[in-house]
Length: 239
Figure 1 (cartoon, rainbow, N blue to C red):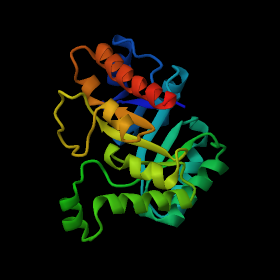
Figure 2: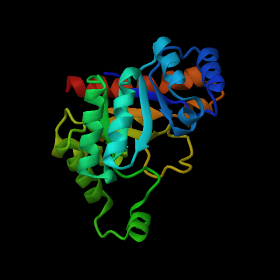
Figure 3: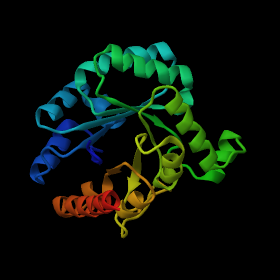
C-alpha cells in the first residue's frame, strides 16, 4: 500500500501536470484536495490514474448521511486509493460513506475519518468548540468512532498516531499530514513532524506538500523526504 502522498496544492490541472512533468514526478502517489478538485472535477482524477498516480482524494465530506452515501457511491468509478470524511459527521454518516463506496464498486478504496485538523491547537479547540476533553482524548474518541463504523483508518497529526495505533491496532491506517523538513516553516499547520519523527510516532502514511512544491529543487526534495520516510519504515519493519 502506498504510504507517501504529494499534495497537489495547485490552482488548476495545467499547473499540476506541468509541475509533475517538469520535475520527473510521474506516477508518484498524490493527494488532491478541494481547491483542485472543485476546479477540475473527476476528469482530473481519470487523467492522474491514467498516468499511474495512486490518489488520495481529500474532500473531508461532512453532510447528511444520504448525501454522503450518494457522493461516495458516485466515486466508485474513480478507482481511488483513499477518500475521507469528517468524523464529526457522526456514526451514521461514516457508515453511509462506507456503504456508498461498497455499493459503487469501490471495495478497494480505503475510507479515512478526519479527527482534528492539524491547524488546531488544544487551547483553540477548547475555546471555540467549547469542549473540555484534551486534544488527544478527542482525537482518540473520533478514531474509535471511525473504526466502529467502518472506516479503514484516520487522518490525524503525527502526535496522536501512536496512541491510535495502540488503541485501534496496527491495521487501522493513520494518515498524517503536516510533514515537513526540519528547516521548513510550520505556517498554518501547527502539529507537524518530519518524516522520520512521524514514523517513530506511529504514522502509517504521510502527506508532503509545500516542502516539495515550493522547493527550488522539487525532485531532489521529494527524494530526500521519501528516503527519510522509507528508511524509518524499513527499520520499524525489521525491528
